Length: 253
Image (tube, rainbow, N blue to C red; front, side):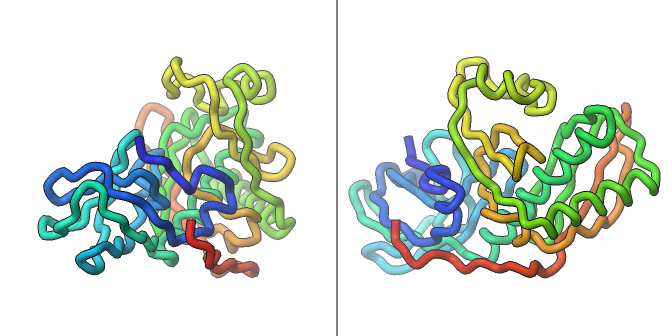
C-alpha cells in the first residue's frame, strides 16, 4: 500500500517534493512506496508533475488507485522495482485543487445549515471551475445569492481549516450522518480523517487536499445552476484571486 503523504496534515498539502522508491511496475505505470501525488477520487482530479529517476525526468500524466497508487509516466520510463525517485507535484494545479475543494466544503456546509439539511450528493473539483450537486432543493435567485454571500463573508473572516482523526461514533455524535454522507463510506472503515472549517462551519470526512485558511480561496463566483432531475440541482462556481496566497514549502518529504 502506498503511503499518502498529503494526508499527514493540512500543511502536508503544501509540500510538493518527495523522495520515494519504486515498488511496482505495470507497463506505463509505476507504484511508489510513498507519494505526494493525489490520485483521482472523492470528486477531486489527480495531480500532475515529474518523477526524476536514474534515467531522467518523467512526466506524471495521470494518478489513480485507492491502496496502491499508480503513476502514469509513459511506456519508455525504464524504471525498475527498487529504483529511487524524487517526485515534484505541479504546484499551480495542486494549489488550485486545494482552494476549490475547500470552497466545496464551505458552500456545502452553509447550504446544509441554510436550507433544511440539503445534502451534497456529488461534486467535481477542477483547477479552473468546479461543481456541486445538491438534493433535495430547488434554488431560486434569492437563495443562491444568500448562499454565495454567506460563503464570501466567511472567507473574509479568515477561518482556519484543520484536520483530525475520529472514529465513526465520534463524528456521528457531533454531526448528523446524512450531513457527512456516512452511508457512502465502507462499514469496515472506523477511523476517519475529519476536515473542519472554523467552529464546525463544515465538518466531514475527507481525504482531499485543502488550504489552511479560507482567505486563500478568494471570493466564490457562481457560474450557473442546472437541474439534474429528481430534486437535484447542480451549482457551478469559480474562485477569484485570493487576498492571501501561500507558496509551497521547500522541505522534501
